[in-house]
Image 1 (cartoon, helix red, strand yellow):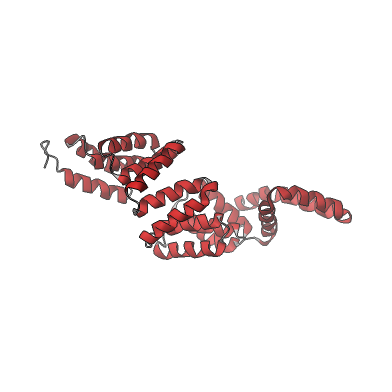
Image 2 (cartoon, one colour):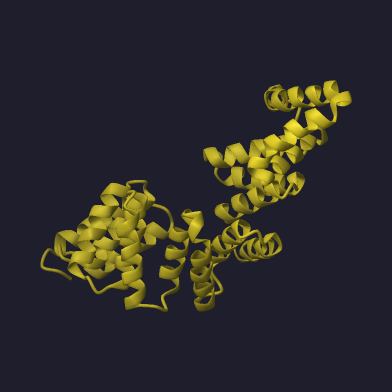
Length: 289
């Protein structure tokens, strides 16, 4: 019990519990009590940064974690979370330094490796290093579904679809209700041209969080792509995206070398451009479900 009559340990524990169940305002209230009693409680400032971050207040979270790091500069986890928040606030160079400093202090902290892998993953040029760090996180703690999900996402970018599928499926076995897992696995299946499978996982993701715009967009594509007519054009779109800048060479070549089929090619091109708004209209009318 502090001089202010506040049980600091109890309030701190209650704040952690509130964060775990998603009650961030309650957590902030509990942390405020801790800081009233002990203004230099580094752990409370760290906890406040986490709650503010989860509540969608990255700038305030950054201010809180700076206080935690200033009070306890040798705490690797605080430094690493500082890196997370620096990245969100578009300070990538400082973020990278914070992560590396944290790993020098504690090279066997699985969460720091996970955070750093996610940071490196955002820059697709750093995929090899990202893969190394997420694999190290999994060596240290193979039972975390989030680690397997990020592993799967990195493997997708590394063009290893079968390994990615296994990583996503492992994550799902560990956390069958995980929103992030359902969304990323559904997205993976959609881009592997398995729209019917993708639809099931994206439908579950949108059930869990119907307001997320990225989930809604992916779900809508899967809803259309599972229809055989739209699937034809979706398959073509995936193929064209994979060949990259050569797609225009292919298109021009088709029109030059298949001149007798010019009208058919022209019709396909026109349909390719109108199929999306057409199917959106059919979905709005309830004719496709």
